[in-house]
Length: 144
Image (cartoon, one colour):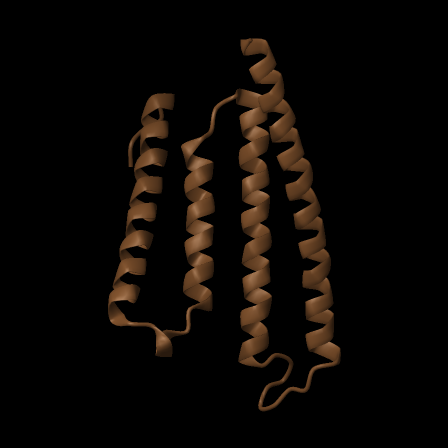
C-alpha cells in the first residue's frame, strides 16, 4: 500500500512540475509581450519609456515569474531529496512579500497594514538569517 501511495505522490508532483513549467513559460512569453507593447505601442506621458503604471505591471509579472521559478526549484529539490527545504520555502515567501511591497499603493494603504507587512518582512528575514546561521554551524563553518 505504501508503494502505491508513493507512486501516486510522485505522479502528482511530476504533474505539478509540468503544469508549473507551462505557467512559467507562458508568463515569460507574456512578460516579453508586455515589455514590447509598453516600449513601442503605449503612449508615454511625462516619461521616457515607462509610465509608473507600466512599471508596476512589469515588476509584478517579473516577481510572479521569480516566485514560479522558486516554487519549481522547491518541488525539484523535494523530488531529489524527498524533503522540503525550509530555506527554499522561506526564499519563496520573501520574494512573495517583496512583490507585495514593490506593488503596494502606499497612498491607499492603512498604517496598520503597513506595520503588519513590516513585521512579516522582519520575521521572514530573521528566520532566514537564523536558518542560514544554523546551517553554517551544522556544517562546521565559523559563526559570524
